[in-house]
Length: 225
Image (cartoon, rainbow, N blue to C red):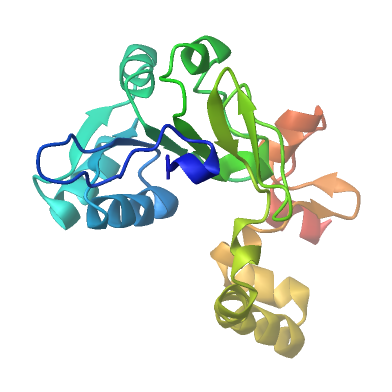
């Protein structure tokens, strides 16, 4: 939040009577974007969500209704809203690939001094050109008077909760691998198979292959060889 103690310009997200609310802009309407919208709206911010998927925007509208403003993602739209925002949250994810740099240095330079950007995509390279990974012990830095929070393992701030949540999500897959062996488990579950990046020296994730310049081979073909 853009509180003075954190290096921000000292604005309460929800404002008080007679003062404006902070403007929060969320780039990406997936899991991160949905939860960010829930929190930002709960704190009273004037909240915008931007995504290139019309279906994602419809899903956000169905969930939150009119209090959440939405916009289809273009470079012009991102520029307009980011440079007018008090808080920007980058929640863009392309599975297996580096995050696209949607917010440029020029946009950051034109933001209000003391504004805050949070790059949740930093573990995939970040979606702000000015982002670099930080740690929980030294979480923020300032570029062009804009506070950057780019902790690469944000769930690590609440390890008890995040560890249980991760275990709950992964345990069924671990049991399937143990009971069936990896070949049968991957053949039976396309979601688990989508997590296979490399098999026997062949890259089985197209995004990883493209990013690293290696040939791609479909997972079932690689396992059958």
